[in-house]
Each structure stands twice: as structure tokens, then as C-alpha cells.
Length: 475
Image (cartoon, rainbow, N blue to C red; front, side, top):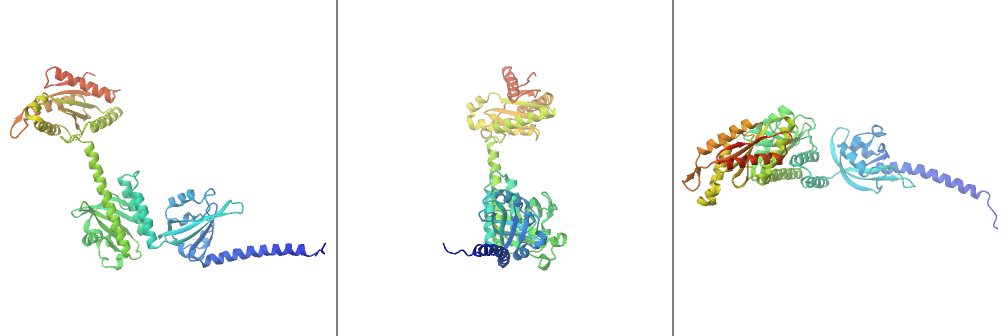
């Protein structure tokens, strides 16, 4: 056996220990030195997302010193607390994949200014694989990155079928405010010289939907004069420093554009702040126009949806409510009346001998009679009453807050007016028409079916007993 060196084992052990200690000290020192040499902000947090370390670039970017941040949750760095919570569920938790990935999020610096940050972050696992903390590298997003991020968010808003019209507009306004870094966002309508706030995003609560202003007292008058997007980044040092809007509200920054709907001026969408901002770029004005076009299209689409909904609920010939709309309204009115104790009456109407009108004058003549009867129905009923056509010559009138006595008055008035009003059929020719009517009043325990059955029996009684009369059902 070769001779054993009595010092070799101890020397190796001491050397290994010394190297490990040197390596630890060198690593800590070198990592801090390395992080401070990076242009990106570095934020290191523990498992509870409390800040443990920030580099020099982070101090510059966020405006907080390491002493300001150490031990505080990273929530302080987010502009929107919802983003802090959502990212905690998605990636900053012990169950999340520790692999580094990139995303963009809106941050807030110590002076309150917000900025979109391009972030690359992931977990810091121990040797056993357990998450010990998190590391994030952050830099301000470049203009192109910010525009792409906003466009992606804009698309997700307009494509979200779960949001209704108002929610989509609110989300678009909030997104625009976030993109430009301005607090106040307004969607206005303009009629003559009246500027009306239709929707707004105002964390300070100073502006509300329905507020009206003189158009000349708003910066939007400049957007209308330009016929497109305009921006002022520091009104107090610009040609509009004497404008009433600056004098009255002190708005330093503004960017806005007119909204066109179907080729006509609807109003404006605009973003503003009491704080001056960086000068608006050409890309900002292009994006402002895109937002205005998107809002205009959303308003147009909503009008089309309303029109289609109205058509689906309207009788094509007479313009009265169709059977579906009438039954929905009657069901709602019954539920309300049964809860509140307010009376409710229903008139069922059938034009007498209508087949003979069609046989004599054709369907065109019959249609003229139906149109004339519909006009008469509207004339003898109140705005709160619902007049519907169930089909053919059958009509129904829902009379809220009306008992059987009141319903009888309406039915008799209709019969008298109808007898006094000749109905045009073709050209200058006309005919006199009569109507049979059944009436019932809502009773405790009624269902839609029981109430309709009762009023139908009353109508049948009126027709069987000679027509041109009103019969009231017995309870």
C-alpha cells in the first residue's frame, strides 16, 4: 500500500469548506453586482411576495429605495390591485410552474405615474424543487409593445359576448385611460351645442353619465374643428391656455376624437388629466382614431341589435307588439300586480265579420282595416297600456293599474270610437267595423293560462250573444 499522507484528508476537507464559503460570499456579492449592472429592474420577493431585494434600475424605475420596499408586498408596485391578485393565482404561488415567462402589466411608481412594464418572471426553487421565492425583471414597454398589448386587450373586449353594450364601452374607456396614462375618460354625445356625458371612467367621481356642458367649454370642440384626433400634453403652456376648460377644470393633458355613427357625428371619446404628460406621438393619434372608430362601431352594432330585437317583438303589419312580446309583458305585469296588490285588467278583442271584409275587398283591403284599428287602439289607450296583435283579427290590451270597472270604460270607449270611424279599404272607399270584446281582472292565484282562458271565455260569450259588445268574465 502506498504511504498515507496524514494531512491530505484534513487539508482536502478544509479546502472544500473554504471554497464553499468563498463561493457563497462570492455568489452573493457577484449576484448583487450583476443585478446592478443590468438595465432591467430586478425585484426579488419571498414566497409571500414580500420584497427582499431590488437593484439600482428598480429604484430608478419605481422611485422607491430598497429600504422603502423591503418587507412590503409587491402589490405596492401594481397600478391595479386586480392584476396583483390575478398574477398571484396564475404564477406567483407554490403550485405554479417556476419556469420564467414573459407578460405585460401596468405598474405604478412612487409619484403615482403609471406605465406598462414588459416583465419576465418565474419562481426560485430550492434544491428539493420547493418554491422559495420569485424573481422578476421589468422594463418599460416600448411604444410598439404597448400598442400591441392594448390592441390585444381591445379585441378581447369587443369579442366578449358575455359583456353587454354598457360593459363593453366602460371597458374600452378604462383601457384607453390605461393606455394613455390619463385618469379621466369620457364618451359624449353632442346635440347642437350641448355636450352630454353618456359613459365615463373617473376614479375621482367628479363626472357622471348625464352631466351636460356647453360644447364650447370643452376641449372636444378642437377635435370637432379638426375633424379627427387632437392632443394637448400641457395645456397651460399651449395655445389653449385661455380655453374655458383649462380655466374652469385645470385639465393639462387631453387627447380625443370625434365619433361617427352611420356617417353622422355622434359625439366624442376623449381622455384627460389635471397633470401634464409626455407629448403625444403620431402613433398616439392613430390609436386615438382607432378607439373612436371602435366605439362608433360598437354604438352602431348596439343600435342594430336593438332594432332586430324590436323587429322580433313587433307585428310586421300594425307595428303593435306581437304575440311573443305581449305574452312576456303580460306575464311580467301579472307577477308585479300579484306582489304589489295593484289591479290588472286584460281586454281580448276580435273584429266582427272580418272574413267578409277580406272576401269583398281582398287581403289588401283587410290589411288597411287592421292598420286603421291598430291606430285607433293607440288613440284610446294610455302610454302604459300594451296593445298587441295575436294574429289575424285578434288583438289584446294589457291595462296595468286598472280594475274591471276601468277596463269596461276602456272597452266601451273603443267600441264607440270604432263605430264613429269608418275604415278605409281601397282608394276612397271605406267600411264600418265593429268589435267583440272580453274583459277579465287578475285574481289571486291566477296563472297566465288561467287568466287567458277566462278572458277568452268572456270574448266567446260576446260573440255568441250577438257581437259588437263587451262581456266581463265572472271571477
